[in-house]
Image (cartoon, rainbow, N blue to C red; front, side):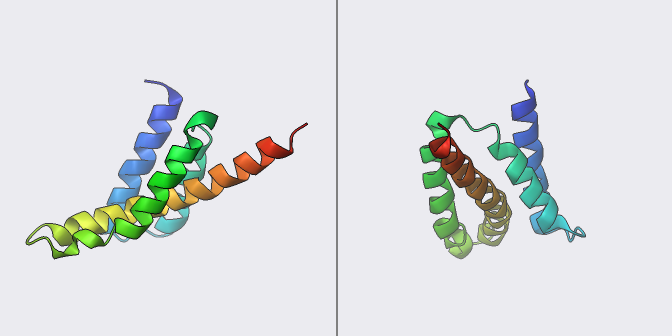
Length: 102
């Protein structure tokens, strides 16, 4: 398992735990982990990642109506949404930097 997978898995697990547990500065840590994970997204996968981030942003709360487990799933996806949004901002900046390189 490479460093890229470890960084992404730690970010994902921390985002889910931080959604349920009140961690001081948890949102900032999730954002930093999202930025770190975005560095490992390949250039050819950036468009797919941005589409996934947009879809998650729109759909993360739509599972609230599931009886019993909907609130838990929505809370976990809301935590992952914060991770993806920070990574998406980084992917956009990396794309702009790649376009501006001579």
